[in-house]
Length: 76
Figure 1 (tube, one colour):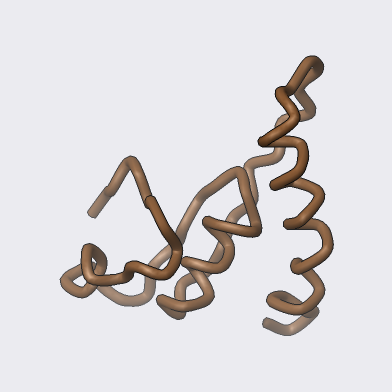
Figure 2: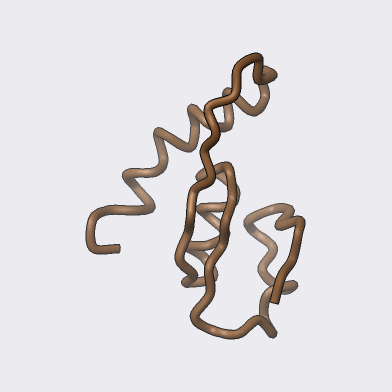
C-alpha cells in the first residue's frame, strides 16, 4: 500500500489498515522517521544533497540530524 503524503507524524490513523511489516521512505528524520518509529516500520532516509535549499527544509534536516541518534541506533 502507498500513501504519498504522510502529514503530521503524530497522526497514525491513516496507517492502521496498512500491512505489517512496513517501510516509510522519506526525506526528513524529524517527521518521516518519527512516523516510521511510531508505526514500528523501517525507515529509509532519502537524502539528496541539494544546493539552494530554503531555510525551512534546512532547519528540519538539522533537527533530524540531532534526533536521529535518539530514534535509531545500530541494531534498531
